[in-house]
Length: 205
Image (spheres, rainbow, N blue to C red):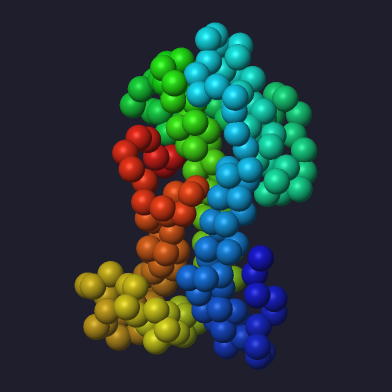
């Protein structure tokens, strides 16, 4: 999903690649759209479940579907259920994880549970995409950090925290990785699996 080897040699080419990969349209295409499509392509016959066996089957089957649609690879039952549990533990941590999600599904909110699993996949992709941009830069080379900060400021300064917008590149350089994280989060923060504002309910963290 990255932009290849850059438009020029050395750090300049790498910085060009990073700036290109941080375009909002590219982030949405690479990070958000595959997961939205996977979620939209899955439906259930009933919005509620009657027992725990039925609940675990639903969340396991959804994970297998989502993973195959996005990553073009299958999962066995145990791994699929393990991923579902991890996603649910994050989204329903205040309600006891699987206990809270099972209760919600019994009360007719199975779709919300599946939304949160999809949101977990999206969150993971966001983290991986962000890390891929950050770690193309030598973490020990301050001059490279300045170049990244300068490029970020020039192209995406309006998306930076207000407290950073008027700083010089050399002042921003120590925070280059946090600026990239902030940028990706800023682009994706208001979008859920349907591409709209989240209206209540739980969010995957």
